[in-house]
Image 1 (spheres, rainbow, N blue to C red):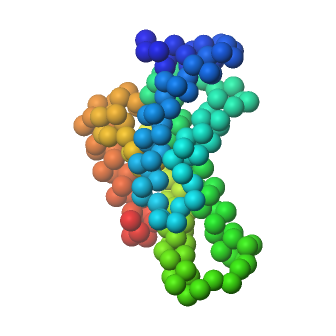
Image 2 (image 1 turned 90 degrees about the horizontal axis):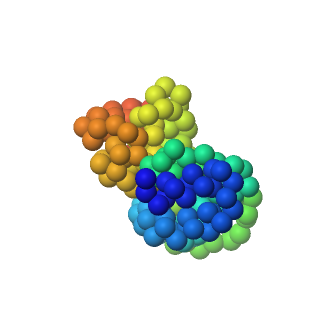
Length: 187
């Protein structure tokens, strides 16, 4: 049993000190995952990897009691938390774009914002399609979450989900094709 799994079990049993032990063990890995995910976002992204990790971590070990079976399960939950944070951020930007935060901008700034708007829209469309895939096949949706939102490799994804790398690769290929079709050819 890894240190992370031991600490996760202690957190589940209600050991408040275990929460303090967890962050130093997983922080760097979560930060790398967050940085990798944010590298695909638009250049004007206001959310930084450190902030994304902290927000995801707070959601994972916050007030609501969580239960993780393993290290892989924890990182799958972290990927989902990061996904939710990024989608919420995209929704806020879209609301502001529709007049919730009106301000005068130069044409050059407006052109850059158009690219950001497209990325926000793409992320929201992806989120809706991923929710639909999750209802159809949760494991394939989890492969997408781990690969796209957490930046895990095929091997890491397979380990996290308890499936073979060949199966993870097949699921990834299928899910990507399904999502592209569902999203109307975006991506």
